[in-house]
Length: 155
Image (cartoon, rainbow, N blue to C red):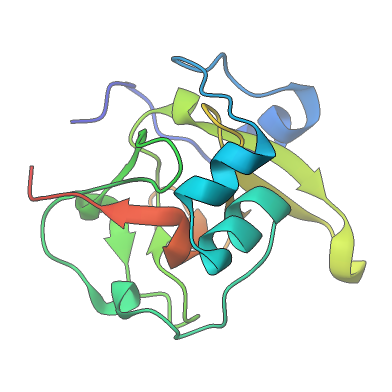
């Protein structure tokens, strides 16, 4: 169950990216060598160096059974499957995080455009980006790299 009473919207995401993200519920910090030992090459490249996996490269895009999704690096619960939807983009997409404080937002001006990067607020793992083209009522699309997530057992 979501702990926040309100729903994040695009103006909220832009404000967080501009003014600073919520205080994380805890912090996990490791050395580069510790991250390398914990993650496979793709997980490391995406989460620790803001890489992007190929679209449609994961079965997670079509996985819609109940459960929760956590950060691959630190295990922080990020999304509930109830907030997952088929975006057709080739990456798992969600409309809301499980709790606002688990995601940090940063303006990303790479690739000749301005986007909002979503990172784990606990361990700084790059997760993906947030866009304002998701379904109502929030209108948000958290476009996540599947290798940055781990699907936990049904909750």
